[in-house]
Length: 226
Image (cartoon, rainbow, N blue to C red):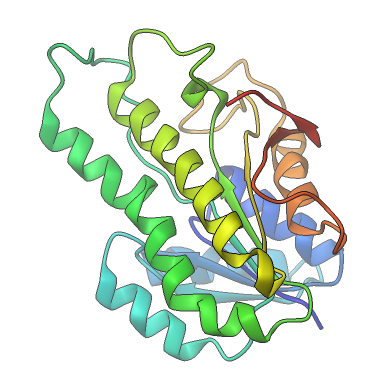
């Protein structure tokens, strides 16, 4: 049995990642900061015949992360999907730094907290994987003006990915960042690619073979420039 945990799993890309992992036979821990929202989403996926269980987890709250880690016995795949503040209304020169700080708590420190908290379980796994859901907007080669809170925190997440991959290589933990592309979700807005395609990009990294890449940045299984 492969156990996968998806943060921010109650809607959008996260929920579809849960669905696709469930269809692959994984036991999926669908987490959200609102326990009722997590249970509602998990229940809908269970109605599809999938083994999906709700988990209350607010990645911006260290106590919540610690409680969740104590509840989870085994874990093979950690998908750090939860993210906030695609701040199209801001510019770096005038940004509200309180918004940037709030974004960092979820987009950067959230994945960091989760990796630290769930590392004992991942180290016990025969095939451990960490997937950090990022964005090509954080790539330095294509970065421009706008969305300073979202972009800077995702760029920092990419840096964290590289460091974690190097530090966990000897433990066999594959750690990668994935850009799902511009997806038609509540955050992405209309006009993007289907959520199924964006989620598949994430799932690819979650089910890599043991000799797969680690410390990379990918979309649809193809490398992206940092």
